[in-house]
Image 1 (cartoon, rainbow, N blue to C red):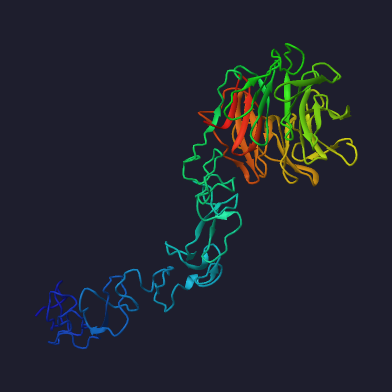
Image 2 (image 1 turned 180 degrees about the vertical axis):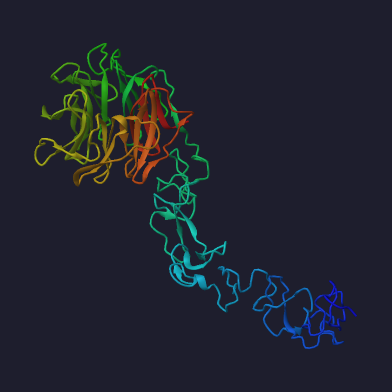
Length: 539
């Protein structure tokens, strides 16, 4: 018995059944702890049990469904929070952010609800892919257009069903869709500017790989574009070549009176230069011959050049005369004949057209002429330039005949504004395809139906000064001769673009080329400086 104040650590109330725990005393709330908290001699009496839910994926949300009622969790995988609609995946629970994946990520009984409305909504049609619809992207953050695989398309400029070899795709084709024009689903064509060159073509003797097998003129033994070796040709500054439609004779003419003929395939060239008795012009002459035309009716050659000199050679002898050209150092720069018997025309560097029907007649025009060709018997195309000094403007003059030849009609050369240079050669392949070529890579294309000519841009690479053009009969191709500095080049133009021309063997000459003449793509001649004369096919 104590009187006065209760000492520290003592109580006046008895009954504590566990004086080591402050939570245990008579009247204390019974806890779910396996102990007698209210000192009534019983454990867990009157405690409200909890509902526990299995959280197998440990995302803090138990699975949906009936839980387990217990004071304590049945296991460490049980939690008091439910609502997990997929307890095998920790990324699926009510607090998850909905992804585009075909799943109910946030357990709200909706799938991909953030991606089902507005532009790019799941399942709606799209055009970026064949038969396309919008589907979830790989990152599951949005949608992307998906469809059936497409076929890559390649440019097919010549429309032969084959695209250019090693080219890059330029489009795509969906299954079942029609093939667009000038497109192909392959890259088999070894020359997409040539309609007759593809894997289905037949190899012919033309110096080209027609069937795209990597070989040229295989199994044909037709020769190649090779220099002709002949003592008569050596050292000649050859300016012009003319060939009969049958293939022979072939005439070459040039500066210093050089003139020679090859009468057939097995014979050598024979000289008719100024020092021979069969020359054209005065004895011992060194006349510069600039142009020649071979009469298909009788195989006679008409050659023209310096100071208005003209000669007609029959292979054994030459009759010649001279037209007095006004001015100094002027010459005939082009010659051509039409009809049977032939009516012969020549153009001069003074811009004059001469015709011979008995006495010579002259038609004047401004500027200078460098090339001449005919379309039929009643249309002559003369090309050159206006003016005599830079800047020069290219010009195409058309002479036509009803009863007599009139004054030239000047044609409109589109795309040549600001161009400084002249046209050097012209060839009328047909009424639809007339080509004129000249300085600085200039190529213009016209027709007999219009005075408007279009410019054809040169191929990629060094710019050439074009000097001659010819077209094989019955084709729409043009073989163009030009020079890169003092090195000669051959290029071929088709209605579909610049093709791969026959290659010189073993290489292009390191000398200027001047003229080309041809009977077909299987037979043509090219002449130039330093005795360079080339023939295809030459053994």
